[in-house]
Length: 186
Image (cartoon, rainbow, N blue to C red; front, side, top):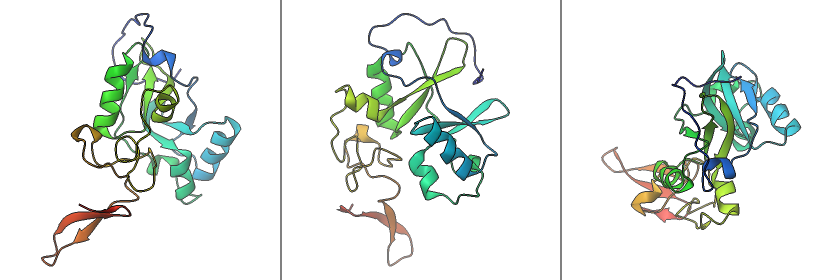
């Protein structure tokens, strides 16, 4: 069983909670595994997201897009983001959606009442359920349309751009004063 540190939390039945839209079971890969091996796991399990574990502890989540952009011989633990948003299966969807948009994350691992990772909830599953509009600049990158790695918090209702489409533009003083994107600059 894969765990995240925390206390026992009894799950309350909920009709409009994360459990109704999460993808389960979660798919795990060891942090020391090579990217090529992780890609094979993702393909064999038909999963877009992998939970990266180090000695039984969740350390990051990687997408197949992250894997495709990385060198095949790198350790998968070196490419995932450690900034995780964790949710419980009985958390109300509305709060989870707001937090995902505020933090610019594409997914959140789902925990059971014992703190074990049981699944994942993604922006894609929320969009398919009609809970996100699929609007560029809001819950998708304003330039490329990706829902991964958004930098601008969408709750501020500024334009959201992914890490790949935003890059610092150096000013004449050498200080990055703005960000350029495929969709313009701000």
